[in-house]
Length: 102
Image: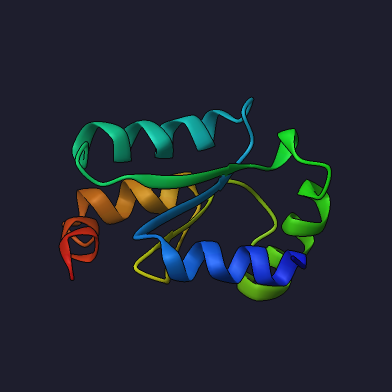
């Protein structure tokens, strides 16, 4: 499977997809928010620093989203952004309807 296929299918096949790095505090913040606020919704988490193709995935995400950093978060195939974007979207009441949409 190519990097493009892996990324695109992870986004298409999961309600929540988080491209993350294990050591990143912004990634932890986003993962914790989803785990605490949406415990019944499984998030697909891809830890780029644990994969040989992590750099290639991150390069494709930059091309796809214009975002260089992690986390790179998608909900129902919509790009939400990074850790601060996820928190802001949640505080503004925009994240819950997206997660709860069919």
